[in-house]
Image 1 (spheres, rainbow, N blue to C red):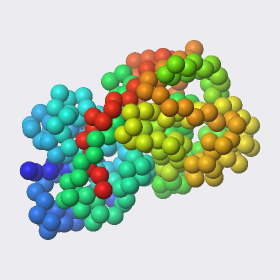
Image 2: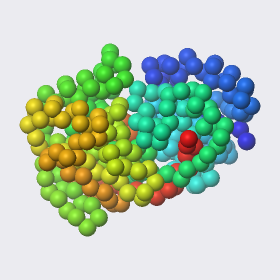
Image 3: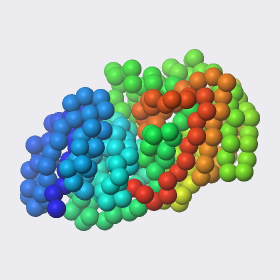
Image 4: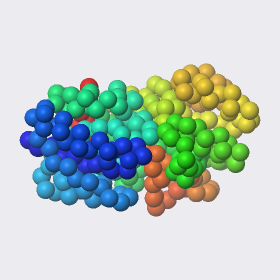
Length: 296
């Protein structure tokens, strides 16, 4: 069966476009039959994935970063044929946080070997309204950072995100929010609320270190109101995933989550900025093992 590659040519600062000839050549050498469709504008990958499923394609590879994978996976899940589709990924982006959790590296040879072997794992996927997320979503400070990182293009990869973190701290605020999880309600002021299907977000921050991609739960890392200097001192522990020991961090697991606030909450979803109908009352759920994903 033919694999369909949906390629974001600007991913990784244009790396995806530059490696495309090599990618085509290696696919031929490995006797992997493939077609290549190129996305040319924001959210074009959504339309391409929708069209692919309608045309009968059942083996699709996302070639790009977390945002491209987010678009393709969401389109597949919204289709009536999602259970029949196998999704793979060749990560070429600034973050690739989902692939970190999945154990997929940035080596092209290794990525193509995963496709050749064809090992499929059934993974969970998150949902809020009609938006799906494969890796993580968040409200508050981390969403503000994601917004700033999109505007700051003069730093590469993790350095760009770290700059966005530090510069956003200077304007940080706390968000009064009610968090309803399975059998528990909390009212608090939070700096940020990170909800993870996977462990990593923000180009390598291990905010939800206990998360598993197929356990039927979302992990929730809540960072409460803390002094500016404590945030700076705690950043190294977030990279290592050892921040759960801090008293200003609350960690929960739940299948259903409801975030409520008197004001619109800044949100991110797989590094993207979702357009929700209601940003003051956000219902989030996990869909258990409905995403068929190529894995090592």
